[in-house]
Image 1 (cartoon, rainbow, N blue to C red):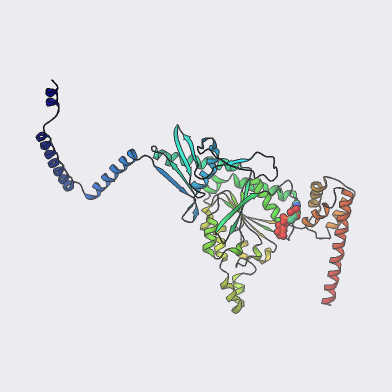
Image 2 (tube, helix red, strand yellow):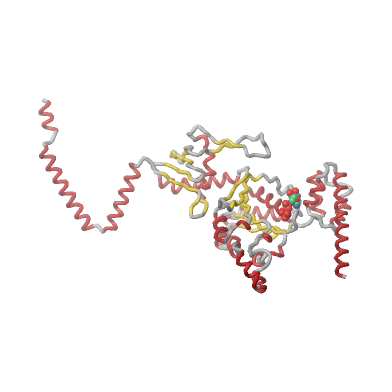
Length: 451
Ligand SMILES: Nc1ncnc2c1ncn2[C@@H]1O[C@H](COP(=O)(O)OP(=O)(O)OP(=O)(O)O)[C@@H](O)[C@H]1O
């Protein structure tokens, strides 16, 4: 029985050989026909589709590699993933987490948790499990066997949207400073306490600024409709100690934007400036302080003036490598649109020294004069520092302010001498009167010298 069973089921060697020969002949014939009929390009296309189909089915996984930098610009998908992934801490599978406490204002605050390098994190999107790996500070990968198209079209968009929402509610802002040696922005937690409530300014100016900022942050569609880059430029000018830096802090805290603080003197040339600025994040403030001392041709004198003076100045001008046009390119040129929702702030103690090109309408949208203390500003400082709305000495002090120039920084220094309003205000009067006297003596000396 058994031998007849095998005899019926297993074909003979000669039968197998004959089938093999027929198949080979058919394959050769089929290939020849294919080569004759189908053009090379179509053949290559079919082969590539065929290979793609099988590799995606038989490969164990497909990996998306997301690196921090691409084409000298910060990869926004990397930034989005970096913001989004810490929300998935429950899905980490390495058995370890980074723990850090960076709230200097409140050491008792709950620590924050981060993802260690090499950790694997799982996520689920529309019922599909996904696995992320943080390979280093600069590379993240996302691995998934199927649903490649859906990940590319929907999942990355979802992460980008989620990260924008997360950033809007983030508590700790950052301040970044450019390190020219490492050619990198270095970050620290931004802990400046100044807000619009604690900044003493004329009420109308403060309200106008807040309205302007709010309109800007809601203005995405407006900027798109009118075909402009979503950015706003502020020029803060006025004497030292009048609150320009404090206003920058108030703007950052109000908008919940991190600050990129750029020392323009540390930038070698326009190309480096471009590289530095394109590696900043959306929703941020780019701050260039003391522009009048920057050493670029944006400061101190305009180009025509230099040309008239010729010789020595011409040589000096050649050495300045960050040019006014390089800077303007970021203020309102083509490069200005490389980052979205960006506020650019220039500060200067000497507006009159800036190149007129920078001051032309449309270049810096808002010019804000931070000036010497006025009676209104003094009363706000007294309310903040001494917690008083009224005092007998207010009237004489306000009168002195009409004659003496004192900066809010000088006034706050006097108000901090004592918590007792009588002592602090008396000290302030003495300070203001001595300033008045010094000024009078200086004026007399000048008059005598002129005579
Ligand atoms: N308008 C203000 N309201 C409240 N405090 C102020 C104001 N202006 C100055 N101050 C106080 O003076 C200090 C110095 O001010 P700030 O550094 O903001 O001035 P600045 O104009 O940026 O000076 P500089 O031009 O020297 O950088 C602040 O830390 C703050 O305490």
